[in-house]
Amino acid sequence: MILPEIGTAGQEKLSRARVLVVGAGGLGCPLLLYLAAAGVGHIGIADGDLIDSSNLHRQILYGAADVGTAKALAAKAELTRKYPGQEFEAYPFRIDNANALDLVADYDIIVDGSDNFSTRYLLNDACVIADRPLVYGAVTAYEGQVAVFNDKTSGVPASNYRDLFPVPPATSEIMNCEEAGVLGVIPGTIGMLQANEVLKIITRYGDTLGNKILTIRFTDYLTQVFSIPARPETPAMIPAGEEAFRKYNYPAFCNEGAEEDTDISADDFLGLVPTAVDILLDVREEHTDLPELGWKKIHIPLQELESRSGEIGNAGRIVLVCQSGIRSKTGVQILRACFPSGTFYSIDGGLGKLKLKLKDIHSL
Image 1 (cartoon, rainbow, N blue to C red):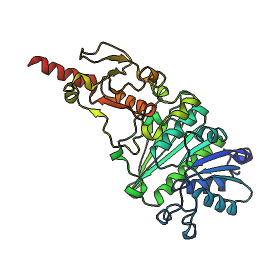
Image 2 (cartoon, one colour; image 1 turned 180 degrees about the vertical axis):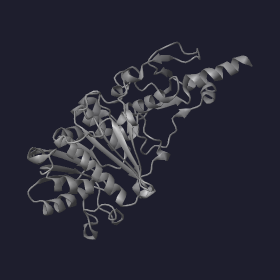
Image 3 (cartoon, rainbow, N blue to C red; image 1 turned 60 degrees about the horizontal axis):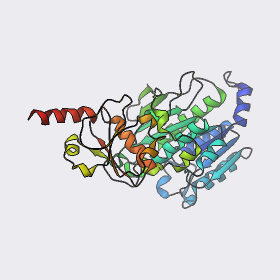
Image 4 (cartoon, rainbow, N blue to C red; image 1 turned 120 degrees about the vertical axis):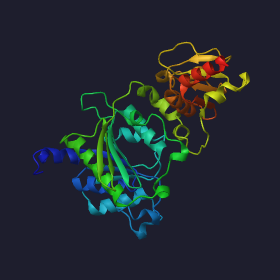
């Protein structure tokens, strides 16, 4: 309260604030401690996992006696013991399509301390739909990053997680803390930085990381801040309203449990027999005629793909193409989320590679 930028008025704002922390692990534990210590009046704790002995070196709310206990319940018990004048609510289950919007709508600020991509995309979309700021953090090995998404106080269009990562990484590229390892102090530091962003949003001291991402490499303390501009095509990637959100298949979108490679080279594509593809789908914004290849052609711009997915339905095998292969990759993920049983491919290198290959063929 002595700090002039915060003062008594800022402390009162903290006492009235409602903050939901999703994930009570390596990021969530320091987050929860510092938010509670700062006097945040109502804190929700959402986590469906149980405490394991391998968690204890970084999840500092727990001890050996807590192993096997639900993280959300153990965190609530410890925080209530330390700060009995504040309200803590435990949600000992995983956030999913059925419960996310109701939970998010009940809080002022959402903090992402999760450890999987489907939850990150789900939380991001729920916050956009419910118009809530999202404080993001992630760690791996010796590196960490922090950002604030959907923060509309800067006067420019607010970026979100899909502006940073339009396409989830391939399954082979994903490793969590249990697989890649992490130095325990790193999620502690990133969690505290997330808590700092929450305090900024509530009290309005300083500048938040809205439309920016902070990265830290802890081996040499290389620290960088990058801008994240809001992309015009991103809104079309987010489910349009509550009904679409509840139907969206986030695990399929993030390739969780799937090893299928959705890229197809121009060579392999041109070698397919006509019956191997049902639709060649052009997702470019500006449509010009595709080469005549014998397949049914449809043009749906990427930003309209989710809302117009009914025009495709379960049409069978669909190959997506764009100019460079980037938009078509995103389109594959959108369609897989809408139709988990469908078969979708993206032409690697896009129309540019395809035309080069056709030119080579015609020159023979």
